[in-house]
Image (cartoon, rainbow, N blue to C red; front, side, top):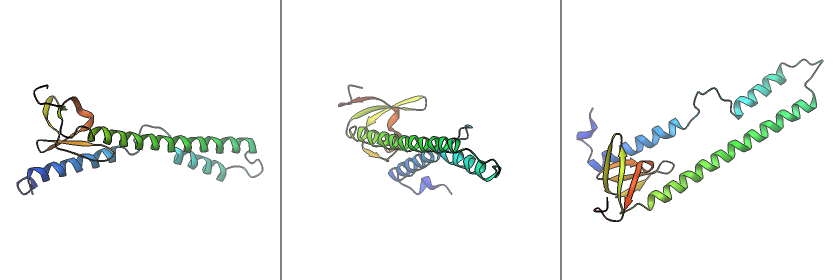
Length: 149
C-alpha cells in the first residue's frame, strides 16, 4: 500500500526523518571489519582458561596482564561511548541554533536552500526545510536572510 496518498506532507517528512534516524542508529552497530571488541577479548580469555592444562596452568603474570588489557579495553570503549554522546549533544545544540535561519543543504547531487522550520532527532539531528528533513551534517551555508544565499 502506498502511504504517501494518505499522509500529509509534514507526516511524510516526519516518517522519513524517523526512518533515516533508525537506519543510522542501526548502522552504528558493530560492523564486520575483522576487529575485536571487549566481548571478543573476554571470550578468548574464557576459552584460554577452560582449555588450559591443569598440570601447567596459566602463570599469574600472564593472567594479570590479560585482565589489565581487558580493563583498559573496557575503559576505552566507555570513553568512546561518552565522546559519541557528547558529539550528539553538541550537534543537536548547533542544529537548534539554525532555527529560523536560511541554509543551503546538500541533498545528493543538488543544493537545497530554505528556512529552517524545525529541528528534530537526538544523536543524528535533522532540520526541516519546506516539509522535508535533511541531515544537519549536510548544511553548507547559513544566513540570517534569504537574499544572502
